[in-house]
Length: 334
Image (cartoon, rainbow, N blue to C red; front, side, top):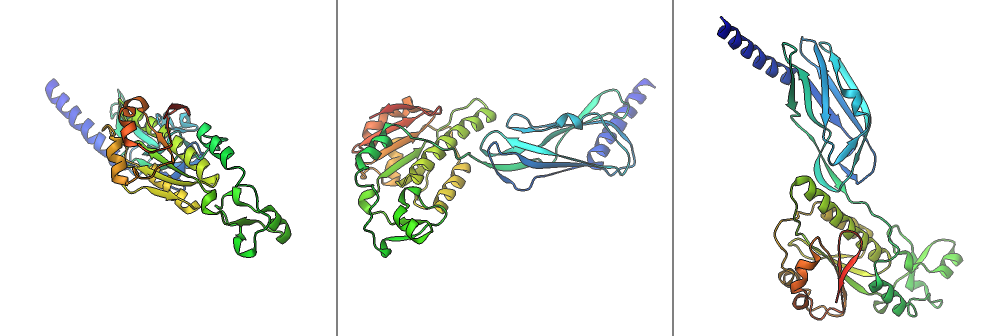
Protein backbone atom coordinates (compact mmCIF):
# COMPACT_ATOMS: atom_id res chain seq x y z
CA UNK A 1 0.00 0.00 0.00
CA UNK A 2 2.81 2.38 0.92
CA UNK A 3 4.60 1.62 -2.32
CA UNK A 4 1.40 2.25 -4.26
CA UNK A 5 0.96 5.65 -2.57
CA UNK A 6 4.54 6.60 -3.37
CA UNK A 7 4.04 5.73 -7.02
CA UNK A 8 0.79 7.71 -7.18
CA UNK A 9 2.37 10.72 -5.46
CA UNK A 10 5.31 10.62 -7.86
CA UNK A 11 3.01 10.50 -10.88
CA UNK A 12 0.90 13.36 -9.50
CA UNK A 13 4.00 15.47 -8.80
CA UNK A 14 5.39 14.94 -12.30
CA UNK A 15 2.00 15.69 -13.88
CA UNK A 16 1.71 18.83 -11.75
CA UNK A 17 5.16 20.00 -12.85
CA UNK A 18 4.22 19.64 -16.51
CA UNK A 19 0.87 21.31 -15.88
CA UNK A 20 2.49 24.32 -14.22
CA UNK A 21 5.13 24.55 -16.93
CA UNK A 22 2.50 24.81 -19.68
CA UNK A 23 -0.03 27.03 -17.89
CA UNK A 24 2.17 29.72 -16.29
CA UNK A 25 3.21 32.11 -19.06
CA UNK A 26 5.84 34.83 -18.71
CA UNK A 27 6.45 37.58 -21.26
CA UNK A 28 9.41 39.97 -21.09
CA UNK A 29 9.74 43.14 -23.15
CA UNK A 30 12.16 46.04 -23.55
CA UNK A 31 11.91 48.89 -26.10
CA UNK A 32 14.95 47.74 -28.09
CA UNK A 33 17.26 44.72 -28.06
CA UNK A 34 20.29 46.93 -28.74
CA UNK A 35 21.15 49.18 -25.79
CA UNK A 36 24.14 50.98 -24.30
CA UNK A 37 26.14 49.89 -21.29
CA UNK A 38 24.93 51.39 -17.97
CA UNK A 39 21.99 53.06 -19.63
CA UNK A 40 18.70 52.53 -17.77
CA UNK A 41 16.10 50.95 -20.05
CA UNK A 42 12.40 50.33 -19.47
CA UNK A 43 11.69 46.66 -18.71
CA UNK A 44 8.33 44.91 -18.34
CA UNK A 45 7.47 41.37 -17.28
CA UNK A 46 3.97 39.92 -17.49
CA UNK A 47 2.71 36.75 -15.79
CA UNK A 48 -0.42 34.89 -16.83
CA UNK A 49 -2.14 31.88 -15.25
CA UNK A 50 -3.83 30.13 -18.16
CA UNK A 51 -4.84 27.09 -16.15
CA UNK A 52 -7.73 26.26 -13.79
CA UNK A 53 -5.69 25.88 -10.60
CA UNK A 54 -4.64 28.52 -8.09
CA UNK A 55 -0.90 28.84 -7.57
CA UNK A 56 0.59 30.09 -4.33
CA UNK A 57 4.07 31.34 -3.47
CA UNK A 58 5.09 32.03 -7.09
CA UNK A 59 8.50 33.74 -7.32
CA UNK A 60 10.69 34.94 -10.17
CA UNK A 61 14.48 34.71 -10.03
CA UNK A 62 16.50 37.04 -12.27
CA UNK A 63 19.89 36.90 -13.96
CA UNK A 64 21.95 39.32 -11.85
CA UNK A 65 25.63 38.81 -12.65
CA UNK A 66 25.70 41.00 -15.77
CA UNK A 67 22.62 43.21 -15.32
CA UNK A 68 20.57 44.82 -12.56
CA UNK A 69 16.76 44.98 -12.52
CA UNK A 70 15.11 47.36 -10.05
CA UNK A 71 12.52 46.27 -7.46
CA UNK A 72 12.74 42.54 -8.14
CA UNK A 73 11.85 41.86 -4.50
CA UNK A 74 8.24 42.69 -5.39
CA UNK A 75 8.05 39.56 -7.54
CA UNK A 76 8.35 37.02 -4.75
CA UNK A 77 5.70 34.84 -3.00
CA UNK A 78 2.86 35.90 -5.29
CA UNK A 79 -0.49 34.13 -5.49
CA UNK A 80 -2.19 33.72 -8.88
CA UNK A 81 -5.83 32.82 -9.47
CA UNK A 82 -7.01 31.01 -12.64
CA UNK A 83 -7.03 33.40 -15.58
CA UNK A 84 -5.21 36.13 -13.63
CA UNK A 85 -2.64 38.34 -15.32
CA UNK A 86 0.02 40.44 -13.59
CA UNK A 87 2.25 43.15 -15.13
CA UNK A 88 5.40 44.53 -13.55
CA UNK A 89 7.07 47.67 -14.92
CA UNK A 90 10.60 48.62 -13.89
CA UNK A 91 14.08 49.33 -15.33
CA UNK A 92 17.07 47.23 -16.30
CA UNK A 93 20.69 48.35 -16.35
CA UNK A 94 23.28 46.28 -18.23
CA UNK A 95 26.69 46.49 -16.58
CA UNK A 96 28.86 45.19 -19.43
CA UNK A 97 28.99 45.38 -23.21
CA UNK A 98 28.53 42.33 -25.39
CA UNK A 99 25.73 39.93 -26.31
CA UNK A 100 24.14 38.06 -23.43
CA UNK A 101 20.86 37.20 -21.69
CA UNK A 102 19.04 39.32 -19.11
CA UNK A 103 15.75 39.19 -17.20
CA UNK A 104 14.00 36.16 -15.72
CA UNK A 105 16.17 33.11 -15.17
CA UNK A 106 13.98 30.80 -13.07
CA UNK A 107 10.33 30.48 -12.01
CA UNK A 108 9.80 29.07 -8.53
CA UNK A 109 6.51 27.57 -7.26
CA UNK A 110 5.30 25.25 -4.49
CA UNK A 111 4.74 21.60 -5.40
CA UNK A 112 1.32 19.92 -5.51
CA UNK A 113 1.49 18.84 -1.86
CA UNK A 114 2.98 22.21 -0.75
CA UNK A 115 5.99 20.50 0.80
CA UNK A 116 8.89 21.84 -1.26
CA UNK A 117 9.55 24.40 -3.97
CA UNK A 118 10.08 23.58 -7.65
CA UNK A 119 12.17 25.73 -10.00
CA UNK A 120 11.56 25.89 -13.74
CA UNK A 121 14.07 27.43 -16.13
CA UNK A 122 12.74 30.31 -18.19
CA UNK A 123 11.90 28.71 -21.60
CA UNK A 124 13.03 31.71 -23.64
CA UNK A 125 15.39 34.21 -22.08
CA UNK A 126 15.76 37.82 -23.22
CA UNK A 127 18.94 38.27 -25.28
CA UNK A 128 20.31 41.78 -25.76
CA UNK A 129 23.19 43.44 -27.59
CA UNK A 130 24.92 45.96 -25.32
CA UNK A 131 27.17 48.58 -26.90
CA UNK A 132 30.16 49.95 -24.96
CA UNK A 133 30.03 53.44 -23.50
CA UNK A 134 31.64 56.22 -25.51
CA UNK A 135 33.49 58.21 -22.87
CA UNK A 136 35.33 61.48 -23.36
CA UNK A 137 39.11 61.42 -23.08
CA UNK A 138 41.31 64.47 -22.61
CA UNK A 139 44.38 62.77 -24.05
CA UNK A 140 45.57 59.26 -24.80
CA UNK A 141 49.19 59.56 -23.74
CA UNK A 142 52.34 61.41 -24.70
CA UNK A 143 52.15 59.92 -28.21
CA UNK A 144 49.21 62.04 -29.29
CA UNK A 145 50.06 65.02 -27.11
CA UNK A 146 53.50 65.20 -28.75
CA UNK A 147 51.92 64.83 -32.16
CA UNK A 148 49.57 67.73 -31.46
CA UNK A 149 52.41 69.95 -30.26
CA UNK A 150 54.58 69.07 -33.25
CA UNK A 151 51.82 69.88 -35.71
CA UNK A 152 50.20 72.77 -33.84
CA UNK A 153 51.92 75.33 -36.07
CA UNK A 154 50.43 73.97 -39.28
CA UNK A 155 47.03 73.34 -37.68
CA UNK A 156 46.35 76.99 -36.89
CA UNK A 157 43.26 78.39 -38.54
CA UNK A 158 43.83 79.82 -42.00
CA UNK A 159 42.05 83.08 -42.72
CA UNK A 160 42.63 83.13 -46.47
CA UNK A 161 40.32 80.26 -47.40
CA UNK A 162 38.06 80.65 -50.42
CA UNK A 163 34.49 79.35 -50.56
CA UNK A 164 35.57 76.13 -52.28
CA UNK A 165 37.75 75.24 -49.29
CA UNK A 166 34.99 75.43 -46.68
CA UNK A 167 31.59 73.79 -46.37
CA UNK A 168 28.69 73.64 -43.97
CA UNK A 169 29.09 71.69 -40.75
CA UNK A 170 27.19 68.40 -40.60
CA UNK A 171 26.70 66.13 -37.56
CA UNK A 172 29.77 63.93 -37.15
CA UNK A 173 32.28 66.46 -38.50
CA UNK A 174 35.42 66.92 -36.43
CA UNK A 175 35.26 70.07 -34.33
CA UNK A 176 38.95 70.71 -35.00
CA UNK A 177 38.10 71.79 -38.56
CA UNK A 178 35.55 74.51 -37.66
CA UNK A 179 36.50 77.77 -39.41
CA UNK A 180 35.52 80.49 -36.99
CA UNK A 181 35.88 83.49 -39.29
CA UNK A 182 33.69 82.04 -42.02
CA UNK A 183 31.21 80.76 -39.43
CA UNK A 184 30.83 84.26 -37.95
CA UNK A 185 30.53 85.79 -41.40
CA UNK A 186 27.79 83.41 -42.57
CA UNK A 187 26.08 83.01 -39.15
CA UNK A 188 26.28 79.23 -39.41
CA UNK A 189 28.89 76.62 -38.61
CA UNK A 190 31.45 76.18 -41.40
CA UNK A 191 34.30 73.68 -41.55
CA UNK A 192 37.38 73.66 -43.73
CA UNK A 193 38.61 70.70 -45.71
CA UNK A 194 41.92 69.64 -44.13
CA UNK A 195 44.92 69.09 -46.33
CA UNK A 196 46.74 65.78 -46.42
CA UNK A 197 49.71 67.28 -44.59
CA UNK A 198 47.53 68.29 -41.67
CA UNK A 199 46.17 64.83 -40.95
CA UNK A 200 48.15 62.23 -39.06
CA UNK A 201 47.40 58.51 -39.16
CA UNK A 202 47.03 56.03 -36.32
CA UNK A 203 46.42 52.30 -36.11
CA UNK A 204 44.51 50.57 -33.31
CA UNK A 205 44.90 46.82 -32.99
CA UNK A 206 42.19 45.16 -30.85
CA UNK A 207 43.69 41.92 -29.57
CA UNK A 208 41.03 39.13 -29.72
CA UNK A 209 42.90 36.91 -27.25
CA UNK A 210 40.96 36.67 -23.95
CA UNK A 211 41.71 34.25 -21.13
CA UNK A 212 38.97 33.76 -18.54
CA UNK A 213 37.90 31.16 -15.98
CA UNK A 214 34.18 31.29 -16.84
CA UNK A 215 31.64 32.98 -19.10
CA UNK A 216 30.96 35.90 -16.77
CA UNK A 217 34.65 36.74 -16.34
CA UNK A 218 35.08 36.50 -20.10
CA UNK A 219 32.27 39.01 -20.71
CA UNK A 220 33.78 41.38 -18.12
CA UNK A 221 37.25 41.26 -19.72
CA UNK A 222 35.84 41.67 -23.24
CA UNK A 223 33.87 44.67 -22.01
CA UNK A 224 37.05 46.35 -20.76
CA UNK A 225 38.77 45.75 -24.09
CA UNK A 226 35.80 47.13 -26.01
CA UNK A 227 35.55 50.22 -23.84
CA UNK A 228 39.27 50.99 -24.07
CA UNK A 229 39.22 50.57 -27.86
CA UNK A 230 36.11 52.75 -28.14
CA UNK A 231 37.68 55.48 -25.99
CA UNK A 232 40.86 55.55 -28.09
CA UNK A 233 38.95 55.52 -31.38
CA UNK A 234 36.59 58.25 -30.22
CA UNK A 235 39.47 60.52 -29.19
CA UNK A 236 41.53 59.96 -32.36
CA UNK A 237 38.60 60.33 -34.74
CA UNK A 238 37.07 63.40 -33.05
CA UNK A 239 40.51 65.06 -32.93
CA UNK A 240 40.77 64.99 -36.72
CA UNK A 241 43.22 62.13 -37.20
CA UNK A 242 42.99 59.36 -39.77
CA UNK A 243 42.40 56.04 -38.06
CA UNK A 244 42.66 52.39 -39.09
CA UNK A 245 41.24 49.78 -36.69
CA UNK A 246 42.32 46.15 -36.97
CA UNK A 247 40.35 43.41 -35.20
CA UNK A 248 39.49 39.75 -35.80
CA UNK A 249 40.33 38.12 -39.14
CA UNK A 250 38.78 40.79 -41.34
CA UNK A 251 40.12 43.76 -43.26
CA UNK A 252 41.16 46.79 -41.27
CA UNK A 253 38.48 49.46 -41.04
CA UNK A 254 39.18 53.11 -41.76
CA UNK A 255 37.24 55.52 -39.55
CA UNK A 256 36.81 58.79 -41.38
CA UNK A 257 33.13 59.60 -40.78
CA UNK A 258 30.50 59.34 -38.09
CA UNK A 259 28.85 56.46 -39.90
CA UNK A 260 32.14 54.57 -40.09
CA UNK A 261 32.65 55.12 -36.37
CA UNK A 262 29.18 53.74 -35.59
CA UNK A 263 29.88 50.72 -37.81
CA UNK A 264 33.10 50.17 -35.86
CA UNK A 265 31.19 50.24 -32.54
CA UNK A 266 28.75 47.68 -33.92
CA UNK A 267 31.60 45.39 -35.03
CA UNK A 268 33.33 45.89 -31.71
CA UNK A 269 30.18 44.91 -29.79
CA UNK A 270 29.73 41.75 -31.87
CA UNK A 271 33.45 40.87 -31.92
CA UNK A 272 34.16 37.19 -31.30
CA UNK A 273 37.04 37.09 -28.85
CA UNK A 274 38.90 33.78 -28.58
CA UNK A 275 41.10 31.89 -26.15
CA UNK A 276 43.81 31.43 -28.77
CA UNK A 277 47.04 33.37 -28.30
CA UNK A 278 47.56 36.17 -30.82
CA UNK A 279 50.37 36.03 -33.35
CA UNK A 280 50.93 39.73 -34.00
CA UNK A 281 53.23 39.04 -36.95
CA UNK A 282 50.58 36.98 -38.74
CA UNK A 283 47.83 39.46 -37.89
CA UNK A 284 49.71 42.38 -39.43
CA UNK A 285 50.76 40.39 -42.47
CA UNK A 286 47.12 39.49 -43.16
CA UNK A 287 46.18 43.16 -42.96
CA UNK A 288 49.17 44.28 -45.08
CA UNK A 289 50.09 46.86 -42.45
CA UNK A 290 53.74 45.93 -42.11
CA UNK A 291 54.76 48.28 -44.91
CA UNK A 292 53.09 51.34 -43.37
CA UNK A 293 55.93 53.00 -41.56
CA UNK A 294 56.14 56.07 -39.35
CA UNK A 295 52.66 55.82 -37.82
CA UNK A 296 51.67 55.42 -34.13
CA UNK A 297 50.45 51.89 -33.41
CA UNK A 298 48.16 51.35 -30.40
CA UNK A 299 47.49 47.84 -29.08
CA UNK A 300 44.57 47.14 -26.71
CA UNK A 301 45.13 43.80 -25.05
CA UNK A 302 44.69 41.70 -21.94
CA UNK A 303 48.20 40.25 -22.42
CA UNK A 304 50.65 43.12 -23.10
CA UNK A 305 53.70 41.36 -21.70
CA UNK A 306 53.06 38.05 -23.48
CA UNK A 307 52.58 39.37 -27.00
CA UNK A 308 55.42 41.88 -26.63
CA UNK A 309 57.88 39.05 -27.33
CA UNK A 310 57.25 39.18 -31.08
CA UNK A 311 56.53 42.88 -31.21
CA UNK A 312 59.78 44.17 -32.63
CA UNK A 313 59.63 41.93 -35.67
CA UNK A 314 55.90 42.48 -36.20
CA UNK A 315 56.02 46.26 -36.16
CA UNK A 316 59.41 46.95 -37.65
CA UNK A 317 59.31 50.43 -39.11
CA UNK A 318 56.60 51.80 -36.81
CA UNK A 319 57.57 55.10 -35.24
CA UNK A 320 55.52 54.64 -32.04
CA UNK A 321 54.23 51.47 -30.45
CA UNK A 322 52.03 51.63 -27.36
CA UNK A 323 50.40 48.84 -25.37
CA UNK A 324 47.26 49.75 -23.44
CA UNK A 325 46.16 47.52 -20.62
CA UNK A 326 42.60 47.46 -19.28
CA UNK A 327 43.08 50.20 -16.67
CA UNK A 328 43.77 53.07 -19.08
CA UNK A 329 47.55 52.85 -18.67
CA UNK A 330 50.30 52.66 -21.26
CA UNK A 331 52.34 49.62 -20.24
CA UNK A 332 55.06 49.41 -22.83
CA UNK A 333 56.39 51.69 -25.49
CA UNK A 334 58.90 51.20 -28.28
